[in-house]
Structures are given as structure tokens and as C-alpha cells.
Length: 585
Image (cartoon, rainbow, N blue to C red):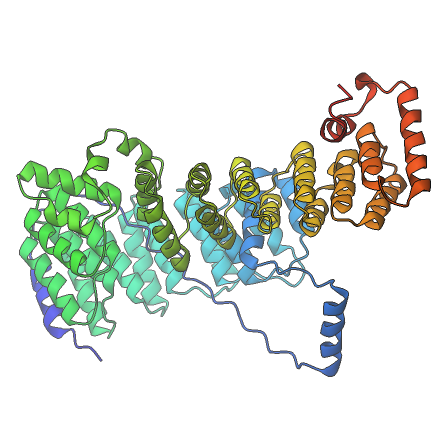
């Protein structure tokens, strides 16, 4: 067990004396519902019958593709966000998923619009066999608190009490945080005391949150007493606890004490993380303190940590105002080159990125510099760490690589979007398809179409027909058939069926081509001049004389009936444009 006695005595001594505090900082989003682990289900015995069933499923080829829960949750979020409640309720009811506490809680944690989150919460209450628990209640409470609806948050908390739902430290900590954010510090203190009176033991997160509330409101003695109480309870500080303490010391002007804590926490086995270093550098910039900043930057350099771009820019300005060298700062953030810093356009491109996303800002800088090799390496690391980027950044990477004819890099960005469940704009998918066709890489096109369909985009009748036709010319009937099957029913019409007929003729499969034509006729889909052109060209030179004569007569009959552009439906016009040399126009 690590002993914290020396560092803790030093911290209490450092912050116990009353010094003027000329600041008020907001709490940094650290208190939210702790992740809820999904209860394990007992393993079912693998019997002989189940083995046979699985074998028959594989033989028949009817096994459903895997649908990951994160994709389902993302889909529900989009439904709630972009639909009216009545429409959303109808769609959600038809999803056919098991609504347990874990699933409902994950949906709420996506933070749909507040009103719809509340309607969804109440809708879930009426589901047969479902009952809200401490996790779903606490997340709903968080949603109201974040929106500043303290009365609604208190109503949810009162419901928990009336229904006998277990209230733990996470719930109390969330209440305390949002009440203090609303400006009611005394109310936050009251919640803290109520938690302890009800026998709910605070966690290190609870202690840290309460200390933050007290420090932010210049109640230093009380914050120090809480820290001492935490230590006496046998709860060791974590990295965020030290962040709160050092943040106070820097803003209070106790720079040396902050540095000593920074050193001693490492001796106690708690390593400063990137978030802590970014917070401290930001506070040093506001205080104009460059000595402490230099020490922190040295640690970051030695441990391969980097600053978020906005903080890097702030630190650069602070060092320049102080007349000090920025060499160490540039070593910490080597990706921020001087030319991108001095370029007046750089802030504009970074402004579109989330301030909390260093990776997103860095990718934008590299995109501006056209450093595509560096983007490949950075994106590979982002994939390994499962960091979520904005969809427009991923789409930009794909489009830029497409213009530079770098299909492997563009596919890397696409694979990242699929893994993270990110839906791209339609133009990004089309850019990928065009690039793969130009490079004769047809195998991956099916994956692109699947991703495009999942994102709710349509390939379109003309592009769908043209793509199938192009795959037929490249003798890729399997890929063409998969894409045809992915098309919505309204796009399986004269143009796309004719394209598939041409695909099979190009592959030498006359029987499949004629079977596809018969299927088209059974579905009541009319033939056009383009259809007959494909049929006659495919049967030319074969021994199918009877079929050839039949289709030739049908074509003459169609033309004799006054076949003109004004009376031809759009799908037939597209078919004729592709396969009849534009005769319909």
C-alpha cells in the first residue's frame, strides 16, 4: 500500500492558509454517471440440437449479419433527435430489441434532446417487465442538471426516494455538482451532509467534486478539512484530486507549492496525465507564470504528452509576451509547425474542431499542409485508441486522398468510420466509389455501398445502374449482384435489371441473363429499347435463335407503337441513355 503521509501533510500546510482568491472556475465535466456494467447471463449448454441448428443455418446461408449494440444505440439516438416523438416512438417500438436497464441507460447517455429523453424515459417505464434502476434515474437526473433544469432534476430525485430506488454516492455527487453549478453553493453543501447522514460513503470522486465546489467558491478552510477527512477515511487521492489542488495553488499564486505537489504525487505512484498537464498549463497562462509552465512542459516532453491546440496557442502567446524561448513548447507539440502557427488561416480551420479533440485539430493542420503520410500514421493510432472524430473530418480525409489517388489511405479512413459507427456525407462515399473504380479495386465497393446504405444514403437510380454496368464490363458479376441486392425496391427497375442482364452476358452466363429478364417481366417491369439492345447483343452468335427472333420482334413492335421520350418513364429513359445510345431523347 502506498503511503501518502508526507505529501498529504505538505498539501494541507500549503493550502490551509487563507490567501485571496481572484478567480471562479467552473467544474470540468468530471462527475457523470459511472459506467454501468452489463449483467452477465449464464452460458447456455451447447447441446447436440443447437449444434445441428447452427450447422443447418450455415448450410442454408441464412445467418443474419451481426448488429452491434453501439450501432443500435446510435440509430435510436438519431431517431429521437430527428423525428417527432410520435414517429420516434413508433420506430423504436418496432426495433425488436430487449429493453433492459443497460440499453435504456446507454440511450439516455447519448444525450438526445432533453424533452425527448424525458418522454423516452417515461415510455420505457411502461414496458412490460422493465423497471428503472439507480443507473437510469441518475442519467436522467444528469440530463436535467446539465440543462439547468434544477427543479426537474429534484423531481426525478424525489421519485427515486419515493419508489425506494437505491441512491448511491454517484447520484448524490451528480446532484451536488449541478446544484453548485446553478450557483446554490449552500444547497450543494446540504446535499453533501445529507449523503453522509444517510450512511452513503463518499468515494474519491465525491470528495474531489466537493473540494472543487469549495475551492471555486473561496471556501479554502472547508476544502482543506474535506481533504484531510478523505485521507483519514483511508481513500488515497487520484490524479484528478491532485489536479484540483494544484489548480487552486497556481491561481492562488503558490507556484512553488504546486511544483512540489507535482513532484511528490509521482513519488506516491500517481503519474500526471495529459488532462492534468493541460489544465495546469492553461492556469499558468492565465496567471502569467512561465517557471511552473516550463517544469510541466519538460515533464510532458519526457513522457510524450502534448497540449491541446488552443492551449498550445495560449502558451505560445504567454511565452512571447514574457520574452522567453518557445523551443521546449515546440518540442512538446512538434506537429504544430511555425508556418501553420503564423498562417492567419490556421485559427479558422481549427475553429471548426472540438476544443477537446487534440487529434481532430492536429488532423486539420496536417490536411492544410497536405501531409498525407503523417495523417495515415495519426489515423492508425486513433483507430487503435478508439478516439471519436467528427464525421466531416473523416469525410475530408477521404476526399483529399481521393484527389491524390491514394485509395489505401482513403479506405483506412472509411474503415475507421465503420468501426466507430460514424455516418459520412454522401459525397464522401461517392468519392470512394469513384476512386476504387478508377484504380480497378472492385472488391471493396460492396463494403462502401453497405456503409452508404447504413448511413441512410441512396446510391440513386442512375449511379446504381452505371455502377452495375461498370462492374459487368470488368467481369465482376458477384460484386454487381450484391450491389443490386442492396438497392431499395423502388430502384430495382428497368435500368438496373437491364444492367444486371448485361453483367451476366459479359460474364458468359446466358442462362442467368435470361432468367433475370424473366424475373423482371414477372414483376411487371417494362422493357425498353435499351433492354432489347442488351438482350440482342448478348444473344448474338449464340445458338438461341428462337429467343433472338422473339426479342427482335418485340423491339420492332415497341418502336412501331410510337416509342417517344415524352411518354417514357424516367427509369426507362436512364436505361436507354446507358444501353441504347440515348435513343429515347
